[in-house]
Image: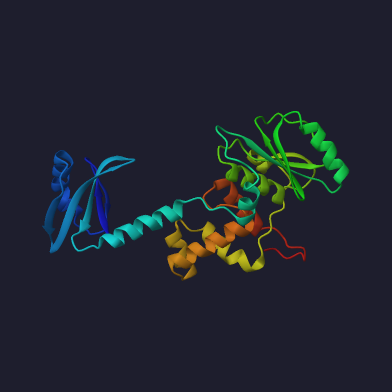
Length: 266
């Protein structure tokens, strides 16, 4: 969707190349709060006031621009910025009820069931909830001051108001941190990590990391934006890592330089 966007002092966006000629009209729209129809360089343009998170702005659209196209653009924007949860996160989230405020989520695993029970005994007094979910014990904490764990692995999220995001973070720690003990998402860079990107994904991950936007990524991949968006979703599902989080992009980058079990660098 091609548009022009003004505030009271400057042109924010000009897809039509006529914003300078319309600036005085834009100020009139802001002052009056009414819609104005203007013709400039052969284009019929409608200028309308809108309330946004950046304050009152003026949006200019071609008069014959279908409203459907504007709505499609808006929906695309919502989808690109919406949080998407990997399947494993959705599965574990069913065990937790929404909470008010913020909480930590921990995932406890151990090669031996006896050691898992010992860790559970240590943590029981400070845990708000303990749920057995097969290979893991799922914990909810209100504090990060946790008992030391030596013979098991406890992976803890940051302080989250969304249970699904807390679970995703804990899963990331569990997936990429090596060793036993208590590990926190916010301290990932301090730990011994093993991040491997499958050879078939290396080119896609590299292009996404080097892209400034999804549109730029689509150009690099010689694909449509829709196809590029699907590729990104598949990667985030597979690796649990979001391309919108700087620290997690660093993990992707680390994965590109990790040698596979055969000794070949990805």
